[in-house]
Image (cartoon, rainbow, N blue to C red):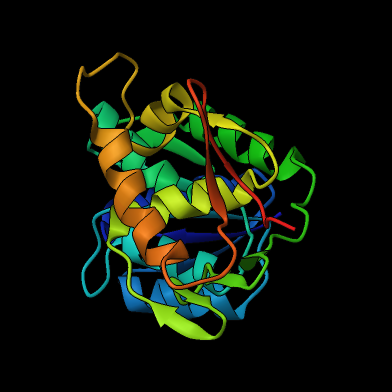
Length: 225
C-alpha cells in the first residue's frame, strides 16, 4: 500500500515509517500540517495516517479541507485526546477511524488494513434540492427561487436533515437525536421554536409551502402541488 503519514513528532514518525516500510508499504511523510494537506490533496494514497495536533494546520482542518475537496482517501486519525467529544469531533470532521496515543504498532497496522479493505465510497451529493429550494453543501449556502436565505448554523443543520428526508416524515425525537444529540426528552419546545423560525425564512412570501406539520407526529418536507 501507498501510505501518507502526517506526524510532527520526528522520532515517532521515524519509528512508524520504518515499521511500515518493513511491513512492505510505501510511505510518504509530512512533518507539518500544510505539507500534509498538499500531499493529501495532490497525491493518491491507499490510507492517510494523520496526527490531530500539528503545527501550521491541525489535523481537523486538514480533514475538513480534503473532504470539502472530495478527497475520499480513508483517514486514520491519531491523537492524544481520548474523550468521547474529541473522538466524535474527529469522526464528524471526516476521519474514518480514530486511534488514541499511545498505541501498539500491531493495532495501527490492523486498522490500516481494515481501512484499505473497505470498498471505495460512492459519489456523494454536494447539493440538495426540493422544489425551488437549493442547498449547496460545500459553500454552505441556501437559496429559494435564486434568492439567498441566511440561516444560523443550527437552522442549516435542521434544514439539511429535512431535505435529506424529503417526502418522509421526521419526528420530534429524530430531530432531537440527530440535530441536538439529545437521547432524552429535554422538556422544552426547542424543536418547535427552531422549526417556526426556519419555516418563516423558507416559506414566508412564497406561494407554495415546503415544510409541513404532521399534527401530533412531526414534520415533512415536500413541494405542495
